[in-house]
Image 1: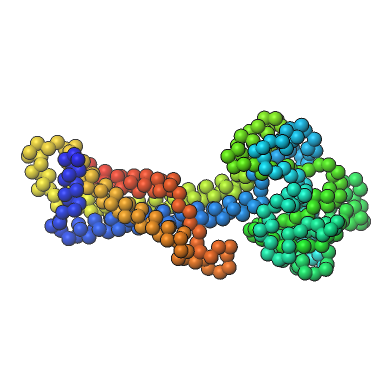
Image 2: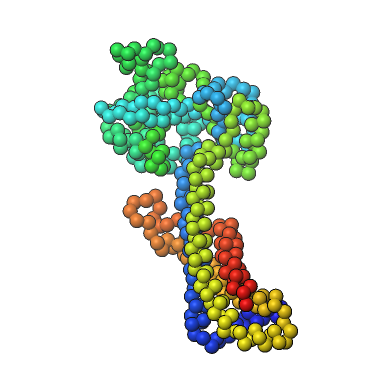
Length: 396
């Protein structure tokens, strides 16, 4: 241990002659500990909510989606899709046809995004786990059925217990629109709603699911699809996506889960960055206690400084003593805060001590502790502590 650090340890842990310095140093340590713990806890809670969003989006999107670069639909007759169907890393391969349509139910109307699923997607859809009323069934014998989002069902006053049929309307692609009777140009189909699902408020308010043959009949697309959805082995997702994109060329887009909801994930990253910067700014304000304590310590130790100078101690060495002193105060507070924050996050994750108010998808506040958050907390708090110690130490 070098000599300036030894002096700093001595000043930090030895009994000081002025109680006010003890008090201000203690406040500095406590403040840094609370600020550090708050960073760990709040970032972990934010990670927990992000995981909920990620899980809900994961139940809506396949691992990889192939869409046309231009236009709404395409015919999947390329040999690339035959190649993809045979790849062992691809676990499932399904077709989807979706469009914005007009719904009516017992006198109520609404616009909705209706997804038509083939038999593979119907059988493997994660939406089965989100049914809150009725059942997940797109067919009853040979009759097609619909499953509707909870928000959309509420706006239509729809229930799978009623016998009323859900009507789906879409303008015919071949018929001319009559200004005197616009309804005459609409194609309409009727289905019985078999169930209601709930994933999140946005999806629940705008989505319904039907068999793909219903959408093909309604939209007059005999073979076209909006997208091809693939579920792949997690470790092979990037490799399969790259191979598909190279084979399909610029006419198609191959999107992973994050690219399918790029704006949502970008927003979550920016929100987390904003929270981190706000909390670091709070720690910066708290750290001014360290600045005050160090200034007072420099005044108190003028005798020691004079003695060391008379013994030939160079000025850089004297500055390092008080630099270390101030930094040790922040590092001590940071260490206490890290232990406290990690402990609180662990207890919340294990026992759910703080519950969520109202009716929510989870009972307690979700938390996810990440090593990167701990690292950035250490960098931020240690950097602020060093800055607050550097300024007064350079003005002996």
